[in-house]
Image (cartoon, rainbow over all chains, first blue to last red; front, side, top):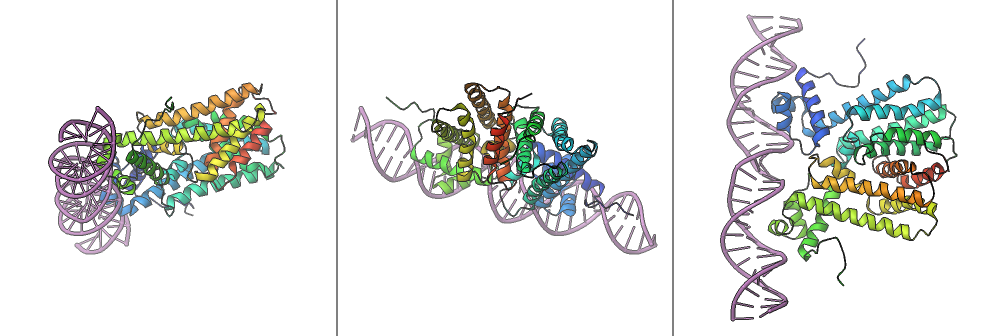
Amino acid sequence: MAPATTEPRLTPAARRVLDTAAHLFYTRGITTVGMDLIADEAGVTKKTIYDRFGSKQNLVTAYLRARDHRWRHHLTTRLDAAGPDPRARILATYDALHAWTRAENTRGCAMVNAYAELSDPDHPGRRVAEEQKTWLHALYTRLLADAALPAAHADTLLILHEGAVTAAAVAALPDAALTARDAADRLLGTTPP
Amino acid sequence: MAPATTEPRLTPAARRVLDTAAHLFYTRGITTVGMDLIADEAGVTKKTIYDRFGSKQNLVTAYLRARDHRWRHHLTTRLDAAGPDPRARILATYDALHAWTRAENTRGCAMVNAYAELSDPDHPGRRVAEEQKTWLHALYTRLLADAALPAAHADTLLILHEGAVTAAAVAALPDAALTARDAADRLLGTTPP
DNA sequence: CTGCGAGTATACCGACCGGTGTGGTTACCT
DNA sequence: AGGTAACCACACCGGTCGGTATACTCGCAG
């Protein structure tokens, strides 16, 4: 049986294009990076890019989808390794975020950055960003239910999560995710409004 | 005595340019908006813009500085109106954020957005963004000292603050600032690590 | 009356933008 | 052997980018 990946199969050149674009978009910004630069950097002609992806908008969306996919995989993997204790699993999301941030997130959340750059409300990339946050909120809601904790905590957990990413990038708080973890730990002992 | 504003005096046309640029930069993004568009929208020729501001980099920096100035003024004003109780003053920062977000922050924090777009680490606009976060962190540190609360809370308060802005914009939590306020209220009763 | 700062209008610069078209070369599949 | 998907090289499109140049008008202060 074929692997039920949601990602479409990519030709070798398309793979290189997507990887190159992902790196350039994240480190330099989406609008700044032109298709010619991506083509050069990937060792590919623009023709190939447009044959595979159709438009810059599609390429941007593919980049965001791939990154979202990688992040969800990272998070769920760490969650699986966190053991059965429901409360520990909630806190493990912040450990996962800390590892992710340390590894490759020196420029903040790619979804938030893309959301800032893609001002056109019809850009499909915006929906990818929105859905990631929706998914994370739903994840927290589920984890809270497993821990028999009030669902009203979910908003706060999400705020701590997003705040940690931003604070690590633009304020100089490299360990913000761990700070958020501690705060979440203490908050879960209190009663939400 | 002349008013001791840090802002340089602007000619009427320069004022219009800065206001127009501020609106366009915030709503559509910095890189996307060209100087021709700003000139048209402000009813001014490009010549005038370059006579007054010298370069796009300078105009962007002026935009960020002006916005930062407005935000600090907004926050300190609300803080002054919050009364003398030190703990209430801490929580008042979130009320101020909520009012600010409601009024004009539908597209997230301008500093964070700019930080995402200005990938060149030497761009002076980045320093404006960094300084705003540094200032806010220092403010929280001061307010905590006034309230005889541990300074270790400052990081968490900043994280809640930044997270509320992001969550309100890209996750659909319009009242995130109030949620952050409640969380801060409960957290201040706990002991930080 | 004169000089100057502020502003307008218009045209221009080279470089780059996203996107298209033509034609040719591999390599694999049947 | 023939077909096709993948890719390359290259040239081109209209439009916009940040930035500059020239030349002119206006109001105002000395």
